[in-house]
Image (tube, rainbow, N blue to C red):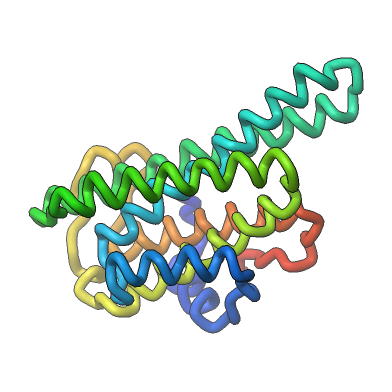
Length: 222
């Protein structure tokens, strides 16, 4: 993930200059709901909820692919396709979990907490509803599930890059923490969040490939 050949600042500028995907009604409803609960401003608690939800679609796809393997084990093409989705989904889950740990660790360093309503009630309801939605969509229209995930990840990419732009103090804040160190060394917290934003771009691109929209992929510069 931490590719030292990537110019993180340049990629941030490219993201902010690029129009977002055309989000569908379901995706826009999700983002509006988060704004109502957390406010329109991008904050660490809001990004933490984003990362908690981000892993759910990949988990749902993995469950669906296991069902496919059980029912279509004699069809080589179906097995290969299912395994491909599962491997991608597992790697994406691990990556999203790293994002979650980094944000959670940073919140603790800064002494940022949440009340019971947000940390327990809202989070539980959001996870429950998004899990049901993702499981049903994976079961009945997984191509559409890939497309919606591409929109979710496109939004996340822009969120992180905007967060860095809106908080120039991140450019001089020294990076500390065991979670960040698992991936590599970063010169400042701005680069950590830029890297997370690029990870979301990778997830966006893979989702577009799987839904048959590979032409919409966004490559790295350079």
